[in-house]
Length: 436
Ligand SMILES: [Zn+2]
Image (tube, rainbow, N blue to C red; front, side, top):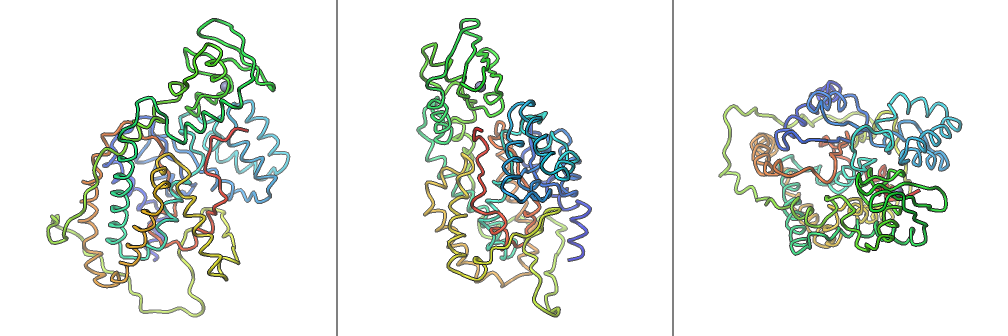
């Protein structure tokens, strides 16, 4: 345990993990990494991905700054999600007036690390590490199993998801947007139905009065002065109003390519294979034998729950009902589990195929009964298995730019995390494109 803590503090485990990860994905241009502010993660990211943008998860930051009241949180999220520097400055000065000590911490963190408007790179509209937390939540019981079974669970999950998504998008038209993006565009279509558009330069530059402000749309540079189009990749209402004005009622070409179904299909084009029988694995020479920790001791009192590692300044959220009432607890789990898939386009296939997903989970969970056997073998085999996994996932490095940034958090260290689901509740809205 002490060794684990030391690794966490020095960043050694994160550095090792990111090194291995870099071997898989290679040098990705315009890479964005979204994490919490754990010093070990910051250190490892700076070392292994010095050219990547490293932003912070706004949800973690909110907890770090102890912003608990609804009013304060509302101001904070509007500040995070502001599209223009002007709007950001207005919101952040509201926040400073309301809670100066929180403002000070946010300033120390650096506005560019958490604000959409002030971000110097492209964070692909990801304001939180929700996707990592969703995976965490999904695997919280499986993480109790030996490491080889955990890895196999992840591998089988990817095999299932990749296959399902390839199948879903296999006949997609090149110009069709994903269901999620289509919904966003339709939203903007309705909003902008009666906005007034005037030409500045025909075919290129237009002014749009949205009844609150007047914005300029430049079709050549694909920009709008509201900044939504260029920052989110989804056309804002102003662009759609202009498009309608010039007689074009098809809007899919206005969205960035990564929202198209064909892009989703190509993201999942590689096949994920089974590992095969352990006896057939190629075992590299010189593998270190790692024995399981000595568990034959018991400290006085109730065992400390080490399921999750809290972020700096984070306080556990108590859900008394969930802990005292199994029925409520399972309901909450269901809600969170269902909500796991809403956050990104990538999750759409799984969202539409929830039954299949939960069946896979169930079968893995049931298989864990045999998991306590052969601990030593499982630990010893881990390195070999991980090497194999790297080979299996290696094909992904050939992909074009990912449609989402990497999102890590310190919860992902293989620590069992039964409490995580209660900290990351289902009311957390993961959709970052919501308009003010
Ligand atoms: Zn606009």
